[in-house]
Length: 219
Ligand code: FES
Ligand code: FES
Image 1 (cartoon, protein in one colour):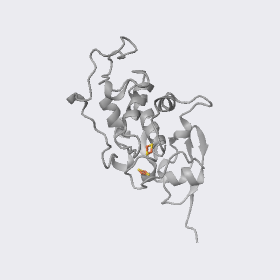
Image 2 (cartoon, rainbow, N blue to C red; image 1 turned 60 degrees about the vertical axis):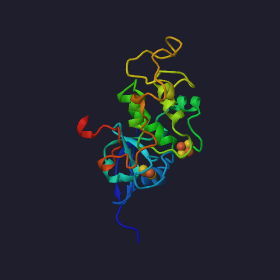
Image 3 (tube, rainbow, N blue to C red; image 1 turned 120 degrees about the horizontal axis):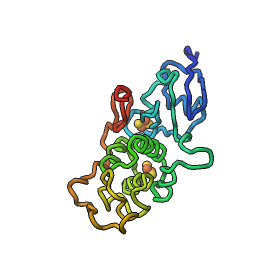
């Protein structure tokens, strides 16, 4: 016999929704099963992989660790909400242009995390990109193309020019867009660019807030 259910109103990608959920239904289950928004993936279901990452009031959270009842009255953005009608988000276009995916299972969580980063920091350094994506696991790509895609989306390089080629400090001139590249570039051996990837285990904060995200108390 089904247990008690509660109607929980919130917005998803700008639309008002009100699924009837049980007290233990996760946000990921509500999105995928009640609202048919299957772009957010169920990977580990325990907070380790980041495939379920969505934005809650603009902050990346792990939907598998967030209860649906916790989002009452709040604003949820999923991968389905990044595009504006037929126009893809620049981060989606950059992932495509850079070939930053193979099986694609990690991709929605990666792109949602990257979108949150660029919203708060339009020109992140490579280290800042690594920090922001450190809770998102990819078993296929080796991460280089993913880093490059974020650099491309932020206008700091073109496809094929980013990731291991430059440090891309905030405010620095685009390495090749401005000068043809080369000068000032930091190679892969530069100690300032010691990679954080592969992603650290447990790249999540208290209450499902993602590493690199901004806690509600900080907003
Ligand atoms: S499904 Fe792996 S962190 Fe949520
Ligand atoms: S592309 Fe397969 S897990 Fe990232």
